[in-house]
Length: 199
Image (cartoon, rainbow, N blue to C red; front, side):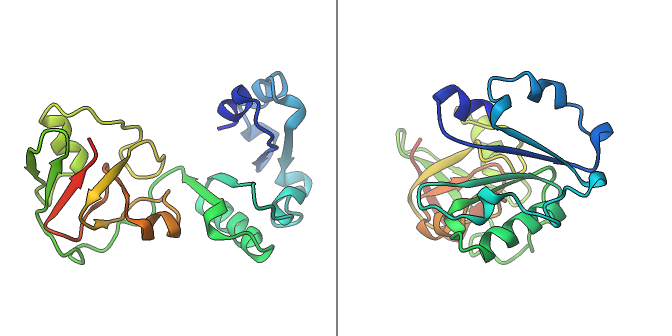
């Protein structure tokens, strides 16, 4: 997560939280990395936790900054709660889960078997209830970006040119969901009978 902004020369601070040093296998890599001077390591067993004392950067909202957090649900909930209480808007908060949250409730989508249409070819592909949009597209030879295939990494947001997505991922912000102009095809579905994708 830190290597990409470091490579572009972006300004950031990496806070690495663990229960204790024994549970932190990447510590040596962090200490010898190109961004070692911008890395702060915290161990809960030494009283240094986000609950006891949130990082200063988290509590000082700035319009041009973002917070990216990855980890267990309880940890991420605490970080988001602290950041929100400090006045950070939801659009600045980005989470990446280690595992998907509880599965979304089934049956609330309008289209139980929507069609995804590819804008570049005009070809439509029905998406059965037991398959994802990504499954169907890759089976048809359509090249798509994928990573976790669980909606927790954010590698596959795909442009939506028409139709309404039924967002089921863990990475899109409320504002991004409301815009409805991208869909995480590995897990999300459609609220309309058809989605036109910018592929």
